Amino acid sequence: GAGVSQSPRYKVAKRGQDVALRCDPISGHVSLFWYQQALGQGPEFLTYFQNEAQLDKSGLPSDRFFAERPEGSVSTLKIQRTQQEDSAVYLCASSLATMDWNQPQHFGDGTRLSIL
Amino acid sequence: AQKITQTQPGMFVQEKEAVTLDCTYDTSDQSYGLFWYKQPSSGEMIFLIYQGSYDEQNATEGRYSLNFQKARKSANLVISASQLGDSAMYFCAMRLSPGYSSASKIIFGSGTRLSIRP
Image (cartoon, rainbow over all chains, first blue to last red; front, top):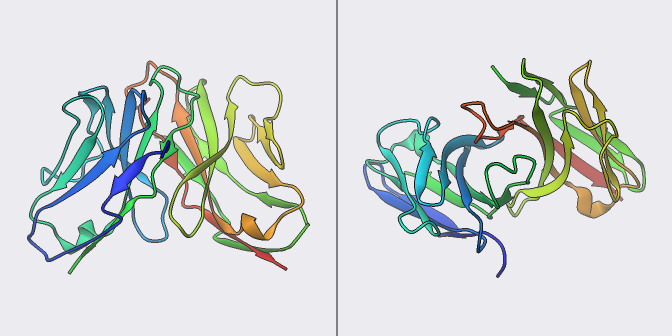
């Protein structure tokens, strides 16, 4: 499809396991964003890429969270040694370019992560 | 620090009526953008409307309009002639203009759950 694609749609993991969440942005979109959305809350910024460069990772809650976008297209958010508080929906968004700051970010359907 | 406040956790509206969803924001910056997103139960965030801080006219997109009152720092969303498909969570959000270190992120409010009654 033409939208932002995220996989898996749902992920259940035991506490302590590592997980990897994938985001395939809209073709040609330079900017890619990851957000974490807790139940009943608005999304909170995690990290931002411009092409393959990670320009802002100020929202990553701990060093257990790591994101990459090696070829400037698909991105992976990895969470190591998962904990129960990591349970949330992880949203990926892309937009044409960061300097077009009034450009809306286009979101995927998210990955719902549950840590048991 | 920038902040978005949505004071209505939930609203019920009769189909075909107009509804206003409240949003206030806090920033000391002069240049920023305000967005509204809709999130159905499927989870996807759908962009609805955008208002720039220097835009003199209120933004409109079909049945959506944004009542922008800069001095009051409010950016309320108005949905005219509501439909059953409008039932969803609605988020107000803000982004700073380039040049600020936090310009890459969008800051979201806590959302308002809108339910349309038939």
